[in-house]
Length: 299
Image (tube, rainbow, N blue to C red; front, side, top):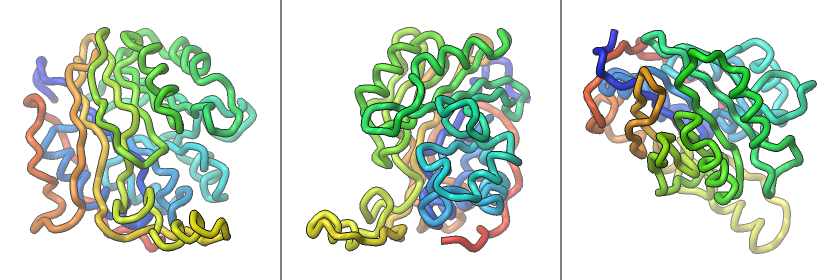
C-alpha cells in the first residue's frame, strides 16, 4: 500500500502505432510501473494492429504488459476485430459521443492497484472529424453518472483541433483531474496544471515510430502528396518512442499535483524491461505486474 502522503500516479500513453509501438510498450511499461510506482496505465490503442485497430490477442498482450485501460478513437469501426474486443473487454472503450446504439461504451469506473476508484470518459472532437454528439455535453452527462466517491476523473479528447481540446480543458478545469488529447500523433509542449487543479495537455503524441509521417512510411505518403494518386500507407519502423504523460494526483481530493511529459526511446537499453532513468516527480510506492511474454505476431 502507498504511504498516506504519496500521490496517486497515472501513466497515460499516446496512440500505440503498429509493431514498433507495441514493442515499446512491452519493453518499457513494466519497468516504468516498478521504478515510478505507477498506480494506473492508460493508452489509446486504435492504431496498434498494423496501424489501424486492435485484435483480441494484441489486447491481451498489452494488458499483460501493464496497460489497465485501452481506448479507441475514430478508427473504432474500421477493423472487425475491434468489435470483438469492445464486446468482450470491459477495459476497452470507444468514444462516448457515438450513438448509444453503437457497440461498447466510452465511460467507466475502474480501480488503481492500491484501490482508488478512477472515473474515465473518452470523446471525439467535432472539428475536422466525423459527425458525433457534442463532446462537452457528453462529458457532462458521464461525469454526472459517476458515483460521488469517485474523486479521480480523467478525460480523453480524441480530436484534430487544438482549439477544441484547449476549450474542453478550460471547460472542465476544477471538475476533473486530467484532460489529455490524442489523435494527431504529434506531442505538444503545453502540459500544465490549470488554475483549479486539472492537469492538461493538447496531445500526447504517439507511442510508435517517429522516423515516418505520423507513424507511416515516408515514401508512400510523399507520393500521395506530390501526385494526388493513391498510395498504400504502411507502418514505419525507425525511431520508436514511448510518449505520454506521468501525472501525480492527490488521493483524497482528486486534484492534479503535477505532470510531466514522457518521451523515451524504445531501443538501446541493456535491460529494456527496467525502464528509463526518469526521475519521479515525488516519491511513491506501489506494485508492478510481471514482465509480459514476447508480442504476438501482427504488423
